Amino acid sequence: MEALKATGVCRRYGKREVLKDFDLTLEAGEFAALMGPSGSGKSTFLHLAAGLLSADAGTIEIGGKNIVGMSDAAAAKFRRRHIGVVFQDFCLLSGKNVKDNVMMPLLLDGEGRSVKAQRSAELLLRHLGLMGRELDYPSELSGGEQQRVAIARALVANPEIVLADEPTGNLDAKAAREVSGMLGELGSEGKSAILVVTHDPVVAARARKVHFLKDGHIVATCMTNGDPDEVSKRYLETYR
Image 1: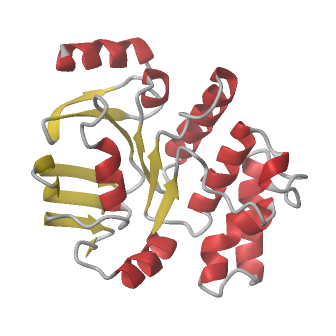
Image 2 (image 1 turned 180 degrees about the vertical axis):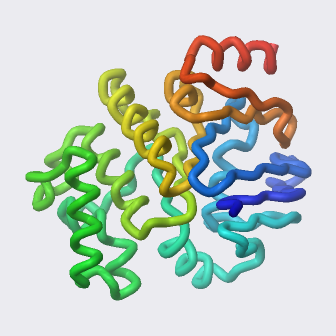
């Protein structure tokens, strides 16, 4: 089954057409990266796929459900249950501890206090190396730890797809390697499809394939074979 299917997606900002007849498909459990120069529309598409923006034309199906045209309230409800989002700047709630931040999508849907939900959060915290930190607050965590909390939050509801927007952009080199490694591990498990927007070939190489965005649509796709140098080479060939 397709976790994400975007067909003929268009998005304008004023007279500028950022995305034009954009098509992209991710199968269930697939891990892919989206690369392109600044301003090419990578983050715009991620926000469209998350239901945070609305497309001007086309369809974006998540698990077979078209989210284009949903009301803000319907999109928010759908996102909590079916889409995980990881932002560059973490977007954690400063007044909530680690565990409550992770459980926020379930708490908002009234499911966060169930035994199943509690166990799901605890398993993610353990898997991402955060056990023992569950009562800490974001201000007590490093940038890498905050991003791990954000990844756990994105996964807690077992979504069809996780959308990660420059997830290592605000991290130092060591933390970036750790976070990209965790994304790679999660991608290899194949429980949720993952689409990561990144400028970093090391992060992109963790994905199975990379899609290159230019002039508002995908112009090339390559298998990464886990090799950042191959990703860099294909990037330069595409945008020279």
